[in-house]
Length: 147
Length: 275
Image (cartoon, rainbow over all chains, first blue to last red; front, side, top):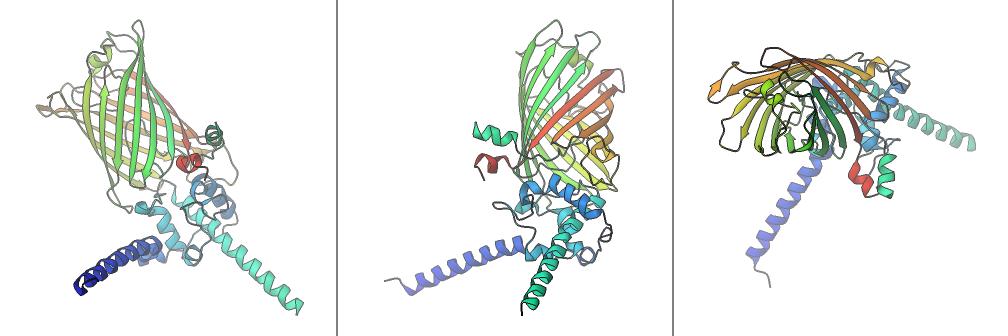
């Protein structure tokens, strides 16, 4: 039978390991916590530019699709950019992530792309939100007609 | 064979370096392999014309760590063609986020002889070294370190490198520098795919040279070069670079011409695993 002292030690080790793991997970998924307020509030100057989505799509294919997939659904060990995390992030937060990367977690900095091009990539990512909203609206409408 | 076919069909990204000698803080994307060939042509006074070649395999090991293997060779007119040796380079980015100035630490081990690739100019390197005959018996095992500082502003990249190199055969530390700046011709991208559009062309210049060694620090008997650089990123993943270099003093080679071509294979390990 295990002595109570050994039990306590085991609990401390397990708890420490869990804490470390949760810290690791938190640092991967909670990148938004690191974004300074001034960056978070930045608006996309290309949000209303009709060409920004198509330009952003081209840039996405050149620089991002290699990891996140042509359709941005992600690849092995590389996250989807259609996720809740990206969908709910502000333009400023996404711009901050593109500029700084998450170097310790495999996302490189894309500061070598000119600012305008980074914003255009974000305009392209935002087009997923609009497409998802339109498809959701269509589903709701047909469900109402069905009733 | 399947892996080779997959690599041939692999989509490609763009090379991240705009210079030949100067390094910026831009690292290779993790998982990508860039294959590059850089050549330098020169015709030194009192020596034979040469074409020195460096084939580079650059791999993004981590977001903060890029590792690179160089295989160097050389052809010298009226002499011979030789394999001059290898270099193993590692670059580490200590700070995770982008800053006004971004430091990168560089460490390289090289084992070469009669090397004329001139990818670094340090100490009292000069035209005499380029005029030397191809002699493979003079092996040089060296450690080279660099402090790379680099910034991006309004589409421009400004890079400053301080170089310290030590021949392991009990010679003093040698020092050098390289500064570069570059910018795409246009920071605005076009919607359609294009090859010769302005966004794909980068123009810049670099200046580099020696600063003497630990026993005789300074500009005396050192060589210095200024070189405009132009690069063109082709849509399929190839990048072409050209740079005419001009010696700035009597100790420098009057004119050298550098040309480079690189091709980047994205996520090579995943592709080899069939993912």
